[in-house]
Image (cartoon, rainbow over all chains, first blue to last red):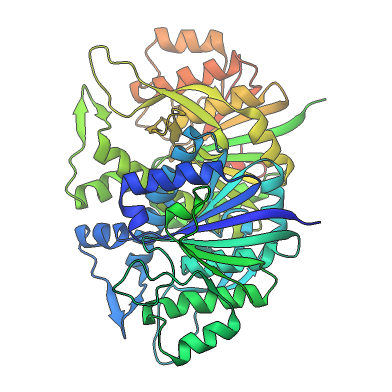
Length: 259
Length: 259
């Protein structure tokens, strides 16, 4: 039987608010067995970027990563957010190690090809070096990944944290019974975006198609759902979406997604 | 016989200038056997701090690390400088992993006690977790340390990079035949600070005392020399001080220090 592995991606307001973050990290520290944390950068990168006079460029609502914005991402995701999480996890008794995709050559990516839009230093995942992750887990360490990858030629790249989490989950599923948790400020996938208590408890591919046809799934949730089903189609056992409470024992008010 | 371990600390202008840094990393990639890189942050932290409107506070010529300056150090040392070095080393074929002292709980420190001056979030090294470093080396990885430590209670601390290098060297010397390299823009310990060609090739404790009595050693060099002899008195085999060229084969114009 495969060993269990929990991959927890945290994002959004969770990272902004020190109390919320501490609550999540505390619950994360209680998860038994092998575990991996993946975090985004939240609004801190925008904040620091603005303070440095770097304007974020957007095309069709998507952020363009120029050289200066990449530097801010490296500072905030790879430095500030990552190292503070690691220090806090150490205090909670979790022997964590903060990593970018360049560290131990774990996530190789290629710079996104320029079609209509040049997204700049944005990387699409090429390969997850699961052997390195396995060695790190085996050494009793808990990896904490930020949303940076590299191209193997010396260039760091900005990569979506949801995608990093699902790609790592897919890579590790050969060896582990993997559950992927998307943890943010909402209670799960909502039937009615304006009603926090309308969490859909279970979704499978059939139900997902129905929900799509009924246009129930909020647009902002679509890329996340795409990542979920991509992971599930590639051996990941289960995906859960919800807020930090989903790691409380007995709590059930979140969304579980299976194939 | 003990295996060899090279610990290379780089600082000063070396980090500022991309070409100089690339030259050093290229030479570092050629060093055979186990190796560890330790880097400072250079002027980049001051630059970013100033751009963010954070004034560095100095007392008696020593920098005070308040909460804001610490955040800058975490961003610049732990993020920008560290991850860029790791990405470049990967491109040079060195499977490196960027670490702070919080990662894998490698360097625990205590916040410097307040006597006359409160230095703020500055850490003095309490313990180097050599077992974790050993496991990382054994996994075929090359650690790249930035100048951050942690107190084990969730607080990151700013620690002098020279000291981190010598403390790691001391810790590892039980198991390895360790050489510590202090690599910066000068050619070595100079007899005459205004003459780059006055490198003193060999120094031992006796000669050091003579040089001190003659006031030959430049004041800025004294803390480095203190670190050197502290390392040598604690099993480190040899300390070398010089510029990047000291890693070129056959090059001899640098300072070697033994007990």
